Image (tube, rainbow, N blue to C red; front, side):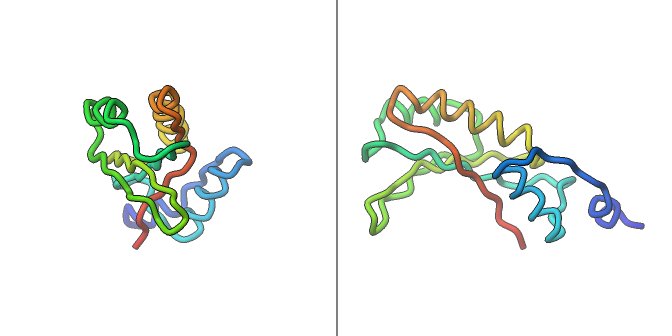
Amino acid sequence: MNKRQAMQTEQHTWPDDVDGDVFRRMQESGFDFGEETDIDFNIDLAAWPPSDALLDLLRGQAFSRVSICPPDETGSGCILVVVHGKLTYELVMWMQRTLSEMAAPFGGWCDSWGVLQA
């Protein structure tokens, strides 16, 4: 059995919530939780555009990338924060909480994330 097969046969237990559901679907599709990957976190804002102070605060952290997603046809834009590492439920919860705390004084919050699956 190679490393990929071993990772796919490991049983993970995640909470019964929306994020846990995403992890279960990823496991079912064969996602390799043992490999590092880019994890995207979206900060949504009550008002657009984002403040320079929030962008400076985020860019001053050790994130892989911070970029602005311009408003779409609905008028909604976001700030994309990318973290490179092993995807774990605990990391996702911590990052969403941390980013929400950082963004809250500027009318922002983070409750969505994702990874690109091949």
